[in-house]
Image 1: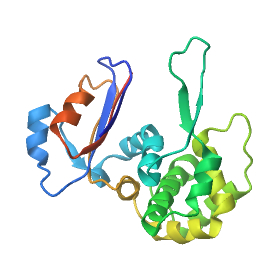
Image 2: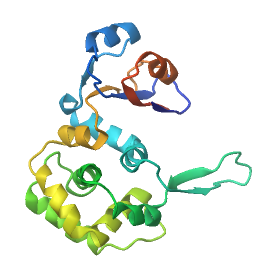
Image 3: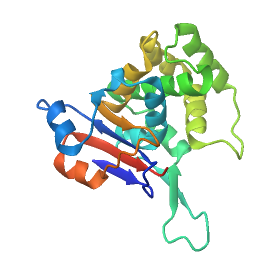
Length: 219
């Protein structure tokens, strides 16, 4: 399981993603670790889907590509560890060799991006998807462009036909189902900021092998 933790307070938010390996007992883990409710990802509210997609964007790409090329840099001279972010040009080079399954998940990642960053809607029709690709294919990267925006633009510019082919099957599909495909996972626990629920990523990682991603976020 991959875990990330910020400085955690009583106002922090947490999320955990679970993959059903065949014997996942929802009610047991809800009771044992006070993680309630654990719901199918598709049943989570849209706000939770959107927030979790944002939290785990880099982790999702790493799960899709296997080993994700990254750029390392220091924000401040006295930083002990470098900050990393996905190296979009390098990722683009390896995308051409991706399998059908990988492309399905890449397309799911793109559709979620289009839902949340362009159309502000949890369901897209075919024209929405086409227009998103067309718009991003002519967009330009500048010094203020975030890596996930650059990645979406690069896909649209360099793989427009293939991206459209794999994205169109998500026409009319709700965001939660698209996120399930993107993560290749089944269940999610999510607690919003201010809930007062404190979780410990390490405990969950140790006790639930089915937990593939987890994060506590500073409130």
